Image (cartoon, rainbow, N blue to C red; front, side, top):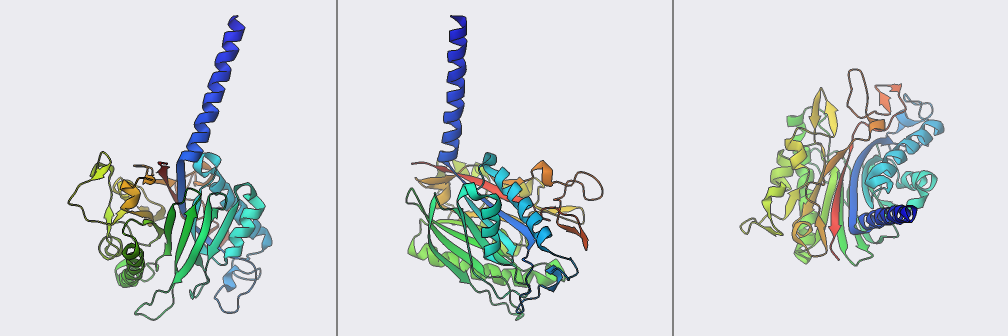
Length: 349
């Protein structure tokens, strides 16, 4: 009798765990962004400056190193979302979208990913793209928004993707990689402000058609949440969970974009280590509807800088930093020089 009761209890616990895991997978939308650092193919693109990343280039970039890079990236992606991988993943620094499809087919085939992006005028040819699970979403449209900088040099397109979920929610996703800080943060700031203006205009077009649009803005902004481009030009309000009272916003708050990365940024957390300082360059920003809506809602404080132990440098001068592909010109065989950022949304119906 005791054995019977023990076995029955054990079966109940196992079934409960299985139900819990199933609910966790079905009840949340898991979203991530990652600067994957120089995901190039090995073929010379005569219209782009990709010479360093060729077999005879300075990085000696060959098929073996490309395969190792894709394996490493896939290992991190798979480990997200309790080893179920993100439902939506924005990426930057990808030479061609087909590289993401190749990675997914080789190492992530069980997740039914599809990748979308548009070739940009960027001189190096490193672009923005989006991966999504086709069993959860249908692609509605993808648009590349050109950023015209006053300095005249070309930069990455802002990728705007519309997805329809299998629960009939339309998501508007903007994937970004703002101009770098090369030449100095202050000297280059105007480029990021101009890019933020283009992004803001695109978001406004969506909100004009639907003030309750579900918008997710993600990217490597090369600025932090309190810099001018993000705070003043894009008008992404620093968000802390204490802003919410129950299910409702403070009534006099008219903001329409909220920066989920702010709490971690305020705590001194970052995605990129530069001169022993952590910078929160990679962020996820959301529209008001995703904080107060009835179908999909941000899981408060779920924003996280994703640092799986196996991609963290464990010792030396750069201990705690992401383990990159190269150290200068020396091949290390790592992952990326940025950590990814992740967040969750509760599905309410």
